Structure formats: structure tokens, C-alpha cells
Amino acid sequence: MMKCKYANKRAFPLLLIAVMLTASISYARAETAEVPTSNKGLRSVVETLKQEAAQLEEENRGLRNILSQQDDGELYVVVDTESNHLSLRQGNNVLHTAVCGTGSRQFIEAETGTNWYFETPVGSFTVLGTERNPVWIRPDWSYVEENMPVPAPNDPDRFVRGVLGRYALLLGNGYKIHGTTWTNLLGTHFTHGCISLGNDDLELVHASVKIGTRVYIY
Image (cartoon, rainbow, N blue to C red; front, side, top):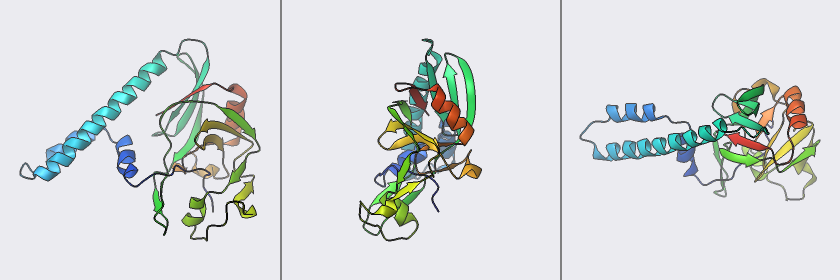
């Protein structure tokens, strides 16, 4: 069965990058302390991871600074992909908090050699548009994941209704905030990159935002 509706097609090296998205500087330091001083290769790897973790922390610090300066009165959306929470905010005020689902961070590979890594992208985004009663067009990875033959691009089987909720907010590159039939998994990393919400929360978010509303994901 299907758990989410869109994926980010990546090369395998992105697996390491995604791991680093959840790494902390303290973890990197702990790893450094456990490496034998005689093993130069491992020391080099750990030092690289430590530098990447530091860079990630710097980027997250920059995003937090942006969020702290949102005082123009406009409503905006914040998604925490670690705790799987979405919030509507205005300035420093949190207007609503919802449990959501985000990318599973799983990797699959087709027999053709095509790879997919399912993560929710982080950074600053904008609501580009909305869809009512969105239709899911099943991508190739959906069939590969279920060990099914991949049909032609225009095959009717690819068009599935009623699985994305009543609304979808478009963030670009195939990523959306939408509903889900897998409501029991909200609060976990179970999607293929999109941000999933329960019906009531989706209704509220859809009614609150507009085209141009900023969405910050970290």
C-alpha cells in the first residue's frame, strides 16, 4: 500500500548528506573521541563529518535567526522535520501546532540502477499554489517499492484519487503539504518527501495561508 505521494530522485551520495541532516555536533565529537589515534583513515572521515555537522549547525542557526526576525505581521509556516511538527506563526506568536509526517529517509534502487532517497527538503520555500481534491500521479518509485512492473507514463493506473486529502499546498519540485490516509503514522518519518497532515489540521492550514506564504523547513 502507499504511504505518501511524492519523492525526491537523488543519487546515492545524497544518503550521506541526509544522514548529516540529522547529525549533531556533539555526536561528531563523540565519534572523534572513540577513534584510535593510530587510524588516520577513520580520523579523516570523522573530521569530515565533524566539519559537515558544523556547517549544518551554522545553516540551522541562520534559519533560526530568520524565524526570530519575522515581525512584518505576515503569517508563515514552520516545519520541524525532527519532531515532525508543523506550526502556523505570526511574528513570534505560535497560532497553531500540528503533528505531521515527513520524509522516511529511506533509500531504494530499481533494477535499472535508478535510485531514490526519500527526504523532506529543508530551507525556505513559498506556497506557489493550491489544489482541491488533488490527484496522485503514481511515480515509478511507487511501483518499484511494491515490486510491481512500471507502467507507461499515461497508464490510467497511475492516476489515484482520494489519497492526498482535500487540499494540497504546492511548494515546488513536486513537494507538497497535503493530507494522508495513513493518519496513524502522523508524527513519524513515513512519507516520500511531502509533508502530510491530518484532515482538521489540513483544513486550518489551507484556510490560513495564501499564495506567497513563506514556509520554513528545518
